[in-house]
Amino acid sequence: MIDAYRPEDWPHFLPPCASVYCQVMSGLLNRHILLGITGGIAAYKAAELVRLLRRAGAQVLVVMTRGAMEFITPLSLQALSGQPVRSELFDANAEAGMDHIELARWAELILVAPASANFLARLAGGQADDLLTTLCLASDAPLAVAPAMNQQMWQAMATQENIQRLLARGVNLFGPDHGEQACGELGPGRMLEPVELLQRSEQLLADGSLAGVRALVTAGPTREAIDPVRFISNRSSGRMGFAIATALAAAGAEVILVAGPVSLTTPPRVRRVDVVSAQDMLAAVEAETFDLLVATAAVADYRPAIEVAAKIKKNQAELSLALTRNPDILASISTKRPQVFAVGFAAETNDLEQYARQKLKEKNLAMIAANWVGDGCGFEVEHNALQVFWSDGQTSLAEAPKEQLARELVALIAEHYKNRK
Image (cartoon, rainbow, N blue to C red; front, top):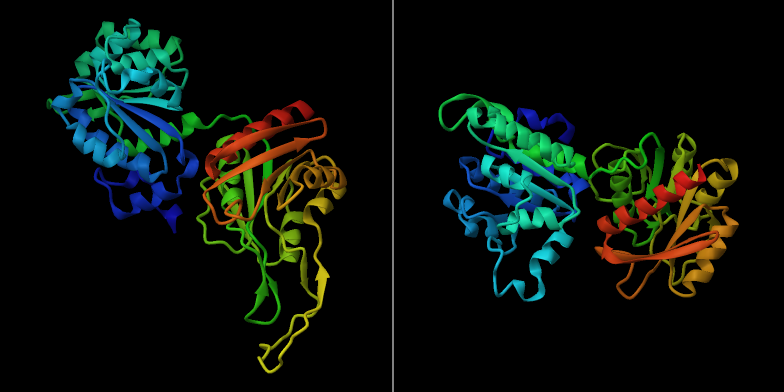
């Protein structure tokens, strides 16, 4: 249903489908975006852009120039971003801990929208005479500018020379668009619409480190039927697996997501296959071809030996249930397809490293990510932490939102995948 909506068909103001689209556009989940706003009539669109970025799951901090505050109030943007708006370089309250440097380190993307001709000139000249230009110079995050100005100003030789200098330094240019302008003229210089700025931001943050790789992710629990109404399962929500599928797609991989029964929206650019039982999941995985396997699914180790055709009645004081072992999907694939780069997951309540390294060796894996479960860890929580092991090394990924943790793990996987190849 969601695929039926195309962003280019949306009207300027947000219809209901826009919020649905942004909620599944999870490539921006928990990404740190510093939004710079400069003086110009297009500054009013910044409110819509902040709302879209937040709905996409990004954390947004707004930095305004003094000119921007002539067109839109900091209070409006603070309400939409949920964070105080910054505008002054010399702020006694904020600068006690060199806060502008902390802002520069915090940002994963600096997006200036709108970017006025004056701002572009100052940026091209390397000036740092206000907070926004200082942050642009002090940060190593990708920098993108969305120009907005009169068509004659955009086409002026000075502006074009400034743009060429910025492009040569690696600054990303988002637009401008061509069309009717606030002054009544027609031509290039319109700021791109917020929806397109959202899409370009997501594309810019995609790193392409796994371009051309076909990856399969298993996620969520499995359900093993006892009778038509009861089943054996576990507490896995599938969130980590879905976050990894999202991160793999953002890294350029072609992603297949084999998911057990979960209530999660399919990530963008991911092909999803729904299954129920462990045997269903094994069949679905074996039916696909792939170069990289990340097995996050919490597959049930056992299933009832006999599935009863009718509902079991509560007419006995005790009930014995015979179980038989389920197939080990990860071990099966790593044995049958040794060329696949296989990454396993281990959820443990004790002796985490011992059990993780044992599984790494026994299942012939390239890598295994282990985490503690129980006492509020692992399942049914938004944060997690991982210990990652491979044959001759290990590393720790500190506790973080699962979406951020997934990006860190995928970056590690990409590094090892390239080295092995």
